[in-house]
Length: 164
Image (cartoon, rainbow, N blue to C red; front, side, top):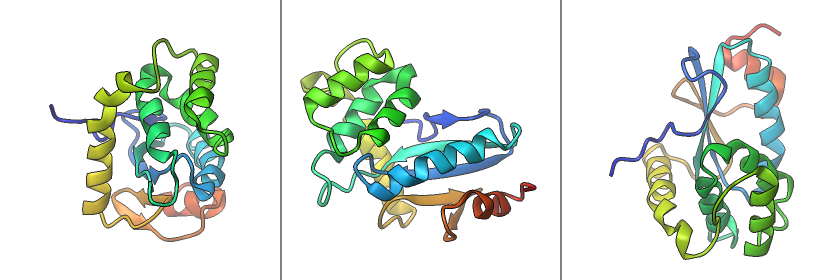
């Protein structure tokens, strides 16, 4: 099975500008970046989209992989789960994930053996991150180029060529 690396799109699917985030749901820097990236896309008047890809840094974050699998298992409710995971990133046990899934309106399991079918998707994101030279999270690409500026709204808008 081939995994669509662009499966988690926030904003217009056909937007001319693309921001890709490689993130980890347990990473505090990703948690801080999440609302900034949302505001960026929401304020782009349809000109930009964001693609989220998983890069769980499991050596530092013991719940990162299970959180990524829970997000994948959320299907069409991915973005609702994404937001809940970042809002509650200090509480990511299996019991917590089940509560967030219920809150997000996810039907079905988001933990345990049932979610292992999503491992391939998380691994595909991770493998692409390694190919792209990702070393930590969050790592942002703007229109295919590594973004090294501050994760601030004005700086990101300028990198995308959007007017303030």
